[in-house]
Image (cartoon, rainbow, N blue to C red; front, side, top):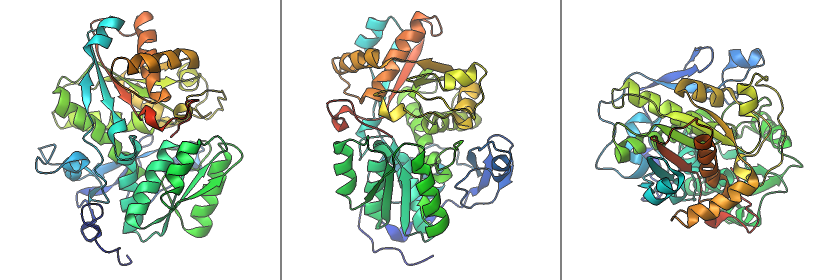
Length: 403
């Protein structure tokens, strides 16, 4: 491993970058094949050879009986449960999970909590992944980190790469809003524009295979999840919900979903908490999507199919489905719900008037909740959590944002 950059105090303590000694390796979430600690940008090699890309989960030899370190702050409280026990940190994590009683009364449901990931340093949940991906890139001596993004993920990774002294390339499309263009280029990161979403992956694959770049996101079609070190960071949302809501948590969690990194991270986090005896049951996870993709696969269509559609909900656009999204839903006994743009636009205003200014794609969880209540999928006596993945301040007037 090459020398790390000089310490930058609280922002970057490179001298203490450390892999968790309890990390034993990874296993495929589909075929359970076990692999040693390493970098598997294309997920499980056996499943990939069969044309069924699949995400990897971390295997730990042992996890401490206590979930968090009370002397640390934010996501660092859960370092012992992460693949890296120290990393480039900008203060990610520690976001609120507030009760919105007036909103619950309006919808006719027992309780609503909103986990506000817009409070992270770059304004989205992506920071929880970026810090872990950047730590891994530094640890193996990578000099460039690359990602496909329509906004939030690119802004997050660019910020963390800058803090770590890494070169960063964000591959996007012409739809990237000026808000995100500015946020990314201000860090010194490079933006490469592909003609359409799937073309981004070809460019990243070439950078990884020909230039040795470290990929923080998927570049396969059919897709796999994002970087397996990064995915572990999303589990901390589940950990924080336990701390804030107690062991009974909530009955249902609604998650804005594209390729399923977040819903998988939540499912894995809740499963770990249950295995550790810290919660009795895992909340049902419902993916919220702008047109039928996951819903189509749940209805019997092939997971490797293409599901095109148009939407203003940039963070949860896309035409593909991952196995990790389907597994998270199956394991939690949840489902998927389709929302329409015009109804989400109404609910973004509605959320703001109850005290939460979330991006358009995050407001989709409120729309999805109302539909599930109306259809009897969620009962009025249920307690519910909505994941607000990003704040509304990052959007332009047309709702342009992304992941």
